[in-house]
Amino acid sequence: MLITLANKPFLRFERTKQDLSSDLRVLLCSLHTVRCQLVCLVSSLAPSLFGNFALARMQRQEAAVEDVVVVGAGLATALGLYRKGVRSLVLESSPSLRTEGFAFTAWKNAFRALDALGVGDKIREQHLQVQALRVISSATGEVAQELDVTVQGNRSGPNEIRCVRRDSLLQALEEELPRGTIRYSTKIVSMEEDGDIKILHLADGSILRAKVLIGCDGINSVVAKWLGLAEPSYSGRMAARGLAHFPDGHGMEPNFLQFIGRGFRSGMRSCNNTDVYWFFTWAPSESDKGVVESGAKLKQFVLTNLAALKVPPKVLSVIERSEASDVFAVPLRFRPPLSLVTASISKGGVCVAGDALHPMTPELGQGGCAALEDSVVLARCLGEGARGGGTESRRIEEGLQEYARIRRWRSVELVATAYVVGFIQQSNNAVVGFFRDKFLSGFLARRLLKMADYDCGTLWSC
Ligand SMILES: Cc1cc2nc3c(=O)[nH]c(=O)nc-3n(C[C@H](O)[C@H](O)[C@H](O)COP(=O)(O)OP(=O)(O)OC[C@H]3O[C@@H](n4cnc5c(N)ncnc54)[C@H](O)[C@@H]3O)c2cc1C
Image (cartoon, rainbow, N blue to C red):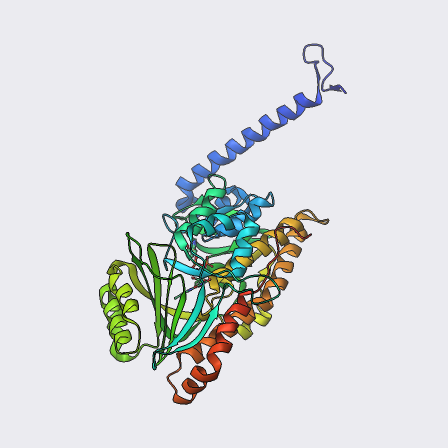
């Protein structure tokens, strides 16, 4: 169709719809340029002319709107979304991928999630399958419980446990993401809402706007605070972790070794043929305040404590072998499980996952595994919500509400069970110790396998 714009002969011209839309684009671009120039002008004159308030308002309106922003290295979440056709931007405060903690025990539930994300086999190739779960009383030196985990223990197939290096996992996830997905050295300091849009204030003073905001920012999550989740509580225990490297092979069997009782819990597992990961958790007293000051002091503290007990010399030699720079400690914290029963896990287009949602003490070895479960469920719910009916913000909200519904009770159960298992395993009380070593250790070991027997499903509903 032709549109007549004027009828004077020298001005008369006929234009197509395409011409008109291209003119409109040019006009909008010019307006945008003028607006940008205005912002620059205001930036330079702002303090004297309008003050910081007007400047912040204009900057806020200028920032581009991202569809989905993931705060923290939530690479599994970003990958799940990418597989569902949803692009996201990951903002990570560290200058590179963080590998604090060296390694973690990945159970069957984690491998189900990794398979759903399409990286399970890559991780399997690099890590040994644990053969047995052996719980040893450090008071007597006796094996309190031994489970062959290669045996099919339940209806849902064989167990799978591997001690996975955190750097290998993060690398495998990063490799699958499109370039430019992760923006390093980018820290969120605060956030606010502007209608359906979330405004993120970054540490460098800049602003980002997002339709969906997913907090994968760990135990001190800014997003969890904004959602009003309860502050994590200190368990009264600390954990030291280390990694020993044996370039010529460690020669150890791929077993899950755990030493319990006498006021501490310790464990050791091999990731592959050259790396052995270990941990030691204890309730610090006034006298051992200074031990966390350096890796060397901490290593000596762990060795002294374990040497005084009936722990095999081979275990001590692994700790000896760790570089002091590869030994460090963290306080163990958890979110009170009852607070999660009513917590706002999602609100509008905002939600939390991983430790930002369910920080737990490490006795089940499930914090990281549960974060992987979260990522699959979240990507499924958000990805499928995006295809439903209604307004975009309504679909986002419903997708996140469904995610929160699925993850709430799983989170409560994991945090509460981890706390109780830790209390019993670490207790120095003679009565608790007697029942634990004689009757409860089998139950506790089976509980670990039971908690891992969870299926988060695939990225697709059916
Ligand atoms: C001693 C110990 C042993 C454990 N053992 C196991 C185990 O065997 N198996 C297991 O599954 N789990 C284990 N866990 C738990 C596991 O380590 C955590 O649950 C897991 O690392 C949580 O991952 P996350 O991505 O949610 O948080 P984190 O690993 O804490 O990552 C949060 C990320 O967010 C970034 N970040 C934080 N704030 C901001 C911000 N404001 N802006 C931008 N980026 C930000 C951080 O730099 C970081 O990269 C253990 C934990 C401890 C302490």
